[in-house]
Image 1: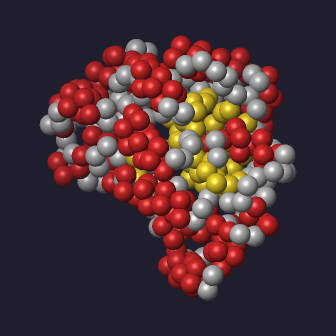
Image 2: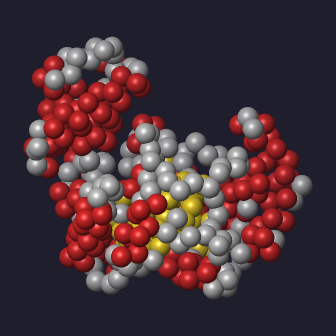
Length: 350
Ligand SMILES: [Zn+2]
């Protein structure tokens, strides 16, 4: 269905009371919608990657919709327990934030606290320890900031820029070649960061200032500790944000992730989120051996008591979704208007 047509249909459905009807229905009652967020902008990140970041104001509007619609925003563990016990309260929602960005600490959590909402953060630990921006992301972000520079000489990074930085494709190409080049050099985290610093210099960007603002950085140990004490639930997302195809390496990612989180906060970590939403059938057995009891994907949909707990769908909420579209999803109407996807056994991003 074309987007505009869909929005027009939603407006009509809302005005004739369909949202409220579905929201209160027995059908919705037995379903859990797990919402997935990534970043909440510290500055302008939502203009750079609207599918990863949203502005704090947009997040607040989402939270208003949840509060005004009297949704039950449950802690993830409780939501899952009650889902499989068939004991969910009406309009169940669970909020999850992927990666553990510093902007969760600075922007999202203070707002969630104000609304009294629970949240789970799936934390990837490598960059949390390193306390430097994630290389591929910061390079892409800086290239976007420098998009009006036109042609830039990037030969010192082994890159012959095919055109200007005003093209998204060119920028993404450069960012991915830089990351590949860095990966091929067997560099440690600080050396990788030096690449970002050199690129910043070439683009006329103050890298120290970006670092001080903690743009594209993860929360540190002290911040995690503070939020855990305030009730944030930290869960697993692999140490290096990857899912190796060998059982030993895959399980080591979980073990390292768990051990790093345990350095900061006590408690059990048995909930997992697939990095980049990528999963394969063999992962399920490996997760079970690591005593992981739930795993979330980025596949769109509601979880029911029939859903495999290691393949839980979510709704990835992004800047591109209007408030009306968001409300259609939390109420349940969105389910009926979404394109049906065949159930899949694996999802591997390109
Ligand atoms: Zn992630």
